[in-house]
Amino acid sequence: MMAEALQAFLEFYGALPRPVQILGQIVLLVAPLMVCVAYLTYAERKVISYMQVRIGPNRVGPRGWLQPIADALKLMFKEIIIPSGANKFLFIISPVISIGTALAAWAVIPFADGVVISDLNAGLLYVLAVTSLGVYGVIIAGWSSNSKYALLGAMRSAAQIVAYEIAMGFALVGVLMAAGSLNLGEIVRAQAGEWGPVNWFALPLLPLFLIYFISGVAETNRAPFDVAEGESEIVAGFHVEYSGMAFAVFFLAEYANMILISALATIMFLGGWLSPLHGWAPAGWFEVPVLGLLLDDGIHWFLAKTAFFLFCYLWFRATFPRYRYDQIMRLGWKVFIPITIVWLLVVGGFILGGLPPWWAPAG
Amino acid sequence: MLEHYLPVVIFLVVGLGVGVVMISLGFVMGRRRPDAEKLSPYECGFEAFEDSRMKFDVRYYLVAILFIIFDLEIAFLFPWAVVLEDIGLFGFLAMVLFLGILVIGFIYEWKKGALEWE
Image (tube, rainbow over all chains, first blue to last red; front, side, top):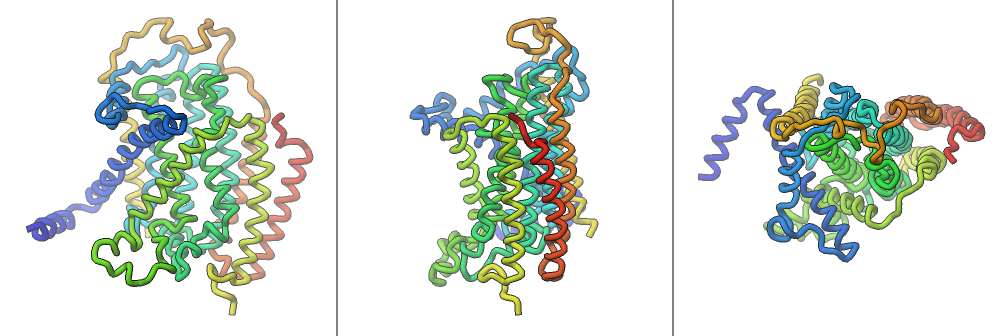
């Protein structure tokens, strides 16, 4: 009965025109992503409150589970204020740019072997290009608001994003050298091997891995690099004049970007969907009927690793005090860039020397 | 090859569409009762003095210019990194030379104080 229904559905799906199929896949990705974003805000409040020995939201629904939905409804019914003197068109278009670029980068993210909407050969280049466009949303929002705080926040934010993008780009070059491909699926496959987790790029590229994730935190303007928002000095930075749904869209874009950075770190350094049990667990473990599937490679490992990075984001925010702006710029330009350049040469040496177990010895 | 980009284009449209739909929803559902005080730009309770499109530090420009140079380097390194295993030692040394020139420029910027924010 189930099999027949599935068969019928697959036939129906196969007969649809190609753009409609793609649209279906996109909806299948974006809808859960939006739910993840909503519940990431809930997780953030809960995690941070427990770290500060509070309870956090606990009134809406059991244990506050409906809190994100209540927040969304509230924001929907709030007035969208367009300040006098603002450039109306740019003011409204900038949150759309933010969310558009934050979502579009997901087109090339592989969730499991072959589970990807568009298997681009230039996947990593595409991700770098689209995420770089996100800075336009910030700077247009800050400029069009016609408010001093918004302009200051936008300037700071843009300079910071741009500075950390260089360190991030160099870290990506290291990954490319190691994997020999721009295709994100190929990058994960290059990390498979008989040594299991040791084969992942996190180990030979450890400095680049740390720099990539820290730069990712700075790119998304999250604590401890959140001078762009700096509520104690410039109130909320570039989105101080936004209210209601327009504000909510910026908020969604920020959280979608956090999840994207975490997913990319997973793919490039922690072996994406690969199971950490390979290489040392007895082969018999993967033969067990249901448990074996869970232990073997699959989307659940990808999600678990991504969730780990997201937890780190929240953890950082609860732990570290905010950096000063000059410290941020010094870290980006004077620490990260020299380290990445040196480590690129080291990785080049590793590859040409054929360092096992990651690269075959030359011969 | 090119058909791989169709999903990307559709995804971009959907992404922008999500933003447009959400903001339109906000305009439709939210009420609108503007008044002069509410619409004035936020400035800690003061009336805004001076134009808010004010002068800002030249170092922001400097960062933007340095970013362009370094980002171009990265774009230039991408194809090299992909084929590194095929071009071997010669390709690697050529890039070391190139990176060396880049690093000389970087040291010059550093010494000139272009990276100072204190």
